Image 1 (cartoon, rainbow, N blue to C red):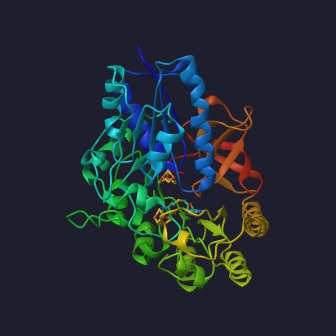
Image 2 (cartoon, rainbow, N blue to C red):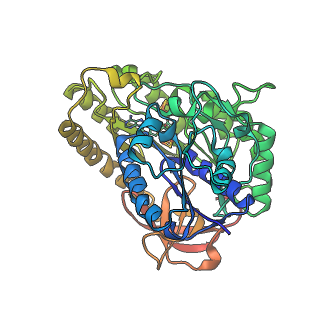
Image 3 (tube, protein in one colour):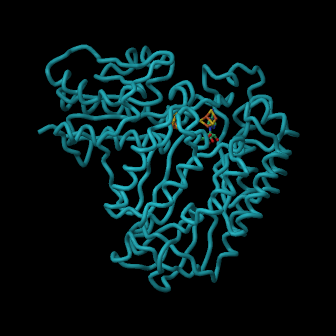
Length: 449
Ligand code: SAH
Ligand code: SF4
Ligand code: F3S
């Protein structure tokens, strides 16, 4: 019996691909190993969105050399976005000769086939990286997916991205937008719910584009409507939305769908019109502010979170000051902040005026120092409130506590017991931190969170 170990880097799309690969491997008869040392098949699913991710992954792949020395029969497969990046295969072949299989984002369904070929004695490195717009159709079909958590699940609805933000590598490594068949999505969700799942998160680089490439007027709004009628499904989340495509009609549709969580993750990226335009984001600050104001009028209790990039090429002190002011006016519940990372092959990488690392580090520190008190102040306002929380299990950081999320996606830690896992429990918020809340259980809550 061969055992596999799968290490995943990157975003939820990659985690989703890894669950599919695990499902495919298990249906081919392989079993999951607890550690990479115990495995004879090691799969690394990679990300290349920032250089920091690539550095970590290169370190991890380097560390596998030792395993190959100890167990020369072990098969090492590297897949995902980093492999799909132009020039990567040649670099891996030069610098990481212990890799046996290199497959791009479009070829993950072929992993069991390539492993079988290697087990049958194929000597050379197996390479399958789609070039240009080639894509493997089966990616949108239904595959066996290995799931771990039963109360929450993620379901991909659209692959790829057509937006070409000038800093971003994703459209080059994930290809063009491709919606999955709505009937397959809905039946996958129904069967997850039948198995006890209460919360579904729909995944895509830009979920708002869902259905544009499908017949019969499918849209993201319609998918939310259809999902809403699935009995016993309590919460619907989605990730990620592009502000330029988040229409007021969609806000109004969500207003009529109580299962759709009142949490809006709308990556702003920069709060300066000049930078937004250079980023090719397709909106300006005024549009963004009007959008979040509208959302807050319709949902006064909602949470709004964002992604921000500092140090985009050409960003002057004044541009950055504008971002600080604008972000402070947006009053985000939380913001994920990133230092701009030059990705070769993207238009922004060609802009001559790249910002030096010291300035970027100083800017991110200033941005975090400005945002954190805002997040804390918003969270402190929740103290004393009773909020329904879907309990996920023991807290990762404190084994004496249980943990779950509010509808607004905030993590709440509280003293609990194992019976609560998978249940909606009303929690009284007793104290607040920047990134999470502390609470105590009031009573099992009725119905939806
Ligand atoms: N499609 C999603 C997710 C993209 S990756 C979206 O548009 O939001 C997640 C985040 O990584 C982005 O929102 C952006 O803030 C950040 N990011 C992408 N490329 C980057 C780069 N080259 N340098 C730094 N951050 C980047
Ligand atoms: Fe990248 Fe922009 Fe697409 Fe998001 S929307 S994946 S940031 S190109
Ligand atoms: Fe990384 Fe690929 Fe996701 S580059 S962020 S794993 S789409």
